[in-house]
Image 1 (cartoon, rainbow, N blue to C red):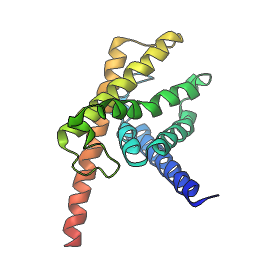
Image 2 (image 1 turned 90 degrees about the horizontal axis):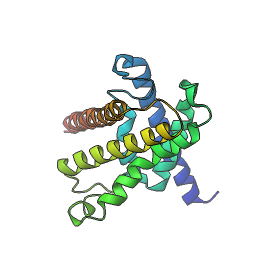
Image 3 (image 1 turned 180 degrees about the vertical axis):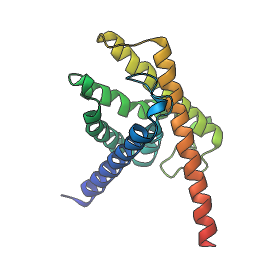
Image 4 (image 1 turned 90 degrees about the vertical axis):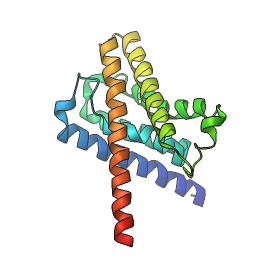
Length: 183
């Protein structure tokens, strides 16, 4: 295996493990946030959708897909469609970032080094990723006879947004603490 393939494999594995860890926290620590079988009002792994794409590009999408496949074990309700559901889920951040990079106002902030990333852009990326994920997933559910509604779609978008913002806030607090410890 070449060195570049090894690096990509590490990215995929790292993102997949992060997805699994956040999913398990959500599953075991926040069960009261579950709105329906398909939506949570706080979904912590959602923060990885745009972050993995920004940091690792297609390898991030691959990691989201692999992590989603593994966590599908916890919800065997959709055995016949779990691959499609995870492709949609893993791709939402990529779609949002490709769309936002078309606008000069956002393009300069959406590079792999995250240099100059402003709070406004974080919020727009988070909200757009949550909306794309919610619309595509609920469209898939509706077209395949799986329970779907406008309320569920909104709950999913809200849960993804809140989960992302909570995780970004915790990351910011953690980084501040690390800086203080390093001084």
